[in-house]
Amino acid sequence: MTACERGGILPTPLDFITGGSSTLDAANWALADCDIIPVATMFRSVPEVKEVDLSQNTLLTDKSLVPLLQKMKRNPACATLTRLSLRQCVRLREKAIQEIINLVESSSGLSNLKILDVSGIPFPVRLQLDFCLALGEHSNLENLHLADVGLGSNPVAKQCLEALFRCNTLLALDLSWNAFGDEVFGAIGAYVSQPHVHLRSLSLSNCSSAGTEGTDQDRQSEQAKPFKPVNLMLECLSKAKSLTYLDISINRLDLTGALILEDALSRHRSLTELDVSRNPFGSLGAHSLMRMYAVSRLERLHCIESFDVGNARGEAFQVSNPEGVYALNLSLPYHRSILRMLLKYCKRLSLSPKQAFTDCSSNLPSFSEDEDGIFQAAQTPGGSWWFLVVPAQDGGHMIYYIICTCI
Image 1 (cartoon, rainbow, N blue to C red):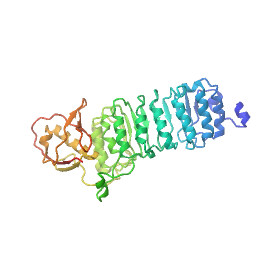
Image 2 (image 1 turned 30 degrees about the vertical axis):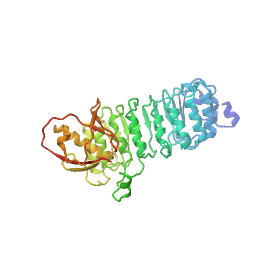
Image 3 (image 1 turned 120 degrees about the vertical axis):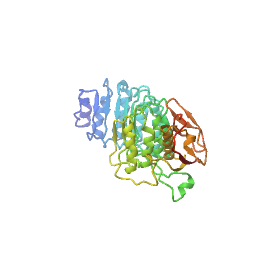
C-alpha cells in the first residue's frame, strides 16, 4: 500500500497483495507495468511464495518484470516457489529472460521450482542455449512449457534439446509451435527413448517443418515426395517406455505417419492418450489408427478433422493382403515400418525371414534382440533401425517377394 501511495497507483485487489495468500494468481488480469511495481516491492518481505502466475498479461514488459525477478532472487522466499508462469507475456525481452536464467542457475534462486511456463515469449536466439543448459541442470523441475518460443529457428536447436533432456526429473515437456526439421525430430526420438529419461507427457503440436523425402538426387527429381520430419521421431516411440500422453496434432501427417504409429505404438505398455487431430490421414490412414487403437492400451484417441481430408500418394501398405513385390528404401521411416510389419507377419505365419523374403536385391540386415523383443539392425550405410521379430518355426505357405535397397 505504501508503494501504491507513493506512486499514485490504484492497488489491484489480489489476495497476495492484501496478505491473504502466498500465491500470486493474476492470470489474464490485463495487468500493466504499474500494477506489478507494488508486487515487486512486496517481494522483499514476504516469508513464502508458492506460485506466481502472470500468464496472459500481454501488457507487461521488462520495465516491471525485471525488478520483480531481481527482488525474487534476493528474497530467501524464492526457494519456496514451485510454479512460475509467464505464458503469453509476449512483450518480455532479453533482460527479463536473462533474469529468469539467473534465477534458475542460482543456488539461492528457483531451486525448488517444479513447473515453468514461458510459452509464447519470443526468446532471443543467443539466450536459448544458456536457458536450456540451466534447465537441464535443475534438480526438481517436472513440468516445462516452451511452446512457441522460437526454438526451431535456432541453428543449435539440437544442442538445446540435448541439454533439456539431461534433466532427470522432467516428466512433462511442451515444445508445440516450434518448427523442427528432420535432424531435430530424429534427435527428439533418440532422447525420449534413453533409459534415464522418464518423460510422461510430450506435446509437439504444429512442429513439423517442410522438406523432401529421399536422397539429394531424389529431392531434385520430379518424383520427390513431401517429407514428414516428425516420422523420424514416431518410429522411436516404442522405446519411450514411460510416455503416457503424446500430442502430435497439426503436423501434416498422412497415411505414412499412421502406419508408423501403428507399428510403434500397438504394443506400447504405458501410452494411454494420443492426440493426432488435424492431420490429413485420410481413410487409409484411419485404418492404421483404428487397428492401433484396437490392440493398444490407449484410453483416448483424439482425431478431430483427420479422416475426412488427405490424399493417398502411391500404393498404401495392404495389411489384409501384404503379398506382393516391394521396393523399399530403408533410409526412409515409412519403408522401415513396412518391413517391420512384414516381419510381424512372419511371426504370425510361423515363417522365418529367409522363407518369407525371396529374390532380394540386397541382403537383409542382421538383427540383435533386446529384452523387449525389439531388434536393432546392424550398422549400414543407410543408418541403424529397430525391427520387431521373434524366432519363427519352419512351415507356412505364403511367400512375399521383396526388393530392399539400402542407401
